[in-house]
Amino acid sequence: MASNLLRFLRLLFSSLLILSTIGIGILGLVSCDGNSSSETTTTTNTVQETPLLPVPAFNQDSAYHFIEEQVAFGARFPNSEAHQKTGDYIINTLKGFDKISVQVQNFTASSFDGKMLSGRNIIASFKPEIKKRILLAAHWDTRPFADQDDERTDEPILGANDGGSGVGILLEIARTLSVSAEQPQVGVDMIFFDLEDYGDNSTPNSYCLGSQHWGKNRMPANYTAYYGILLDMAGAKNAKFAQEGYSMQTAPSVVKNVWNMAHRIGYGGFFPFEEAPAITDDHVYVNQLAQIPMIDIIEYSTEGKGYFGKYWHTHDDNMDIIGKETLKAVGQTVTHVIYNEQNKAK
Image 1 (spheres, rainbow, N blue to C red):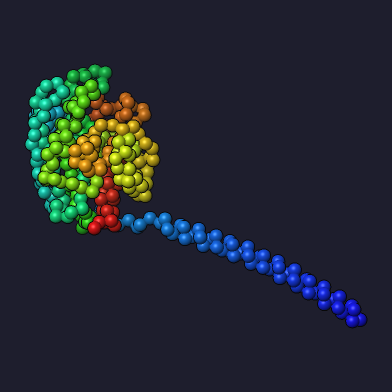
Image 2 (cartoon, helix red, strand yellow):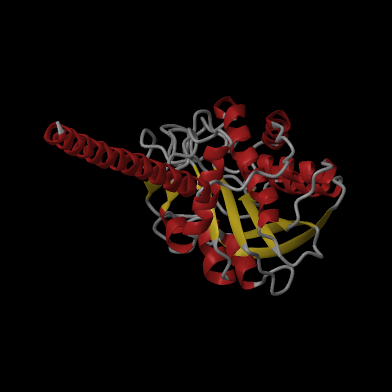
């Protein structure tokens, strides 16, 4: 009887020991899963993006209208009547906006074919008293000949996209800054560069004469900015804006900021994370001469002639190729970037 009881107690003790070991193992597994879940949550929280600040809506219809107004003057090539009238129009439009001050930098430059060209860089400033500044830019002149066309190659082009679109977007941003209740906490400057498109590929530094002049003779004197964004050929239907090579070399963090913003607000389709070759544009001279890290938002097309769309430097560059959705994507992205500098403003 006693022997049987002893065997029973030993068997019971062994069973309890086994169950205890299994229980500890199960608790250990639960604890590991719990720790893993906690670590994942912590990691996710650390990469959460800063909430976006309130930003006014960019009006694509208004931007489109600003392009129409320019194109209505005709081809705006240097020394032409349309060129003079367009410059006056940009200046007067900017002066009509509240909170925007305007300066004009008159200059002359010699073209690659020996002509003396009269130019005007138009400079608009918002909140000039603020030290931290963002520079936006576009060129407002148009190509004096359709060298990429199959006919009428010696005639000037309308340049609705190549010249007109960047100006239209900047004018709409200026208008938005002047009327919006929400205000960015950084200063914003806009330069409408002249004499960008009167150049020849075989002649060094024959393009971008306006930005070259400004870079050597900055207005205001000794002007600098936190960074800059250039808009060129920024309004064609279904355009794609790849990350231009020179921008990636000189200002990769600015490129990342702009492209990430586009994806955050729903315009990633226009701003693919794809690199494109480097090109010479106004941003090159702003970088080199003024030491301001400026990027270029410019269409990159593998279906066009070389880098750009099929319309480039042809008579097809007219209002028919302008897309309001593209204007919205670019304008709203740049507006968001400006306003959300408040998170980093000093």
